[in-house]
Image (cartoon, rainbow, N blue to C red; front, side, top):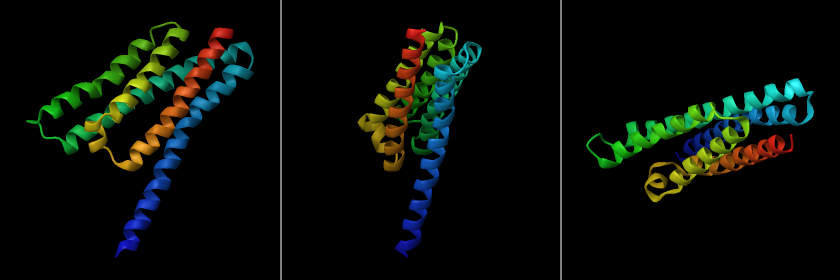
Length: 157
C-alpha cells in the first residue's frame, strides 16, 4: 500500500525537477548568446532574457493565486492577503520591461528575491508542499544567479 504512494512521490519529484530545469534553459541560452554571440544577437538575447524573466515572475504570482483558491477560504483574512500579493509579481514584471535593460534586470532580480522571501514566511511555508519549497529554493538561486550574470554583462558592455 505504501509503495504506490512512494512511487507517485518519486515520479512527481522527477517531473517537477525536470520541468523546473527545463524552465531554466531559456535563461541559460539567452545568457550564452548575450556573452558570446555577435553584437546584434547579444541585444536580441538581452531582450529575450528580460521578457522571459517577466513571464516567469508573473507565473510565480499565479502559484500564489492557486494556493489561495485551493487552500484558503474567501472569508479568511489570509485569502485576501494572498490574492493581493499574488498580483505583485505581475505588477513588478510588466513595468520592469519599460525600463532600460540594466534597471529592468535589477528590478526583475529583486522581484524573484521578494517572492522567495514571501514563500519563506511561516504562513506561506505552511501552505506550500516541501517538494515545492525545495525546488523553488534551487530555481530561485539559479534564476537570481542568471540575473547577476546578465547584470555583469550589461555593466561591462
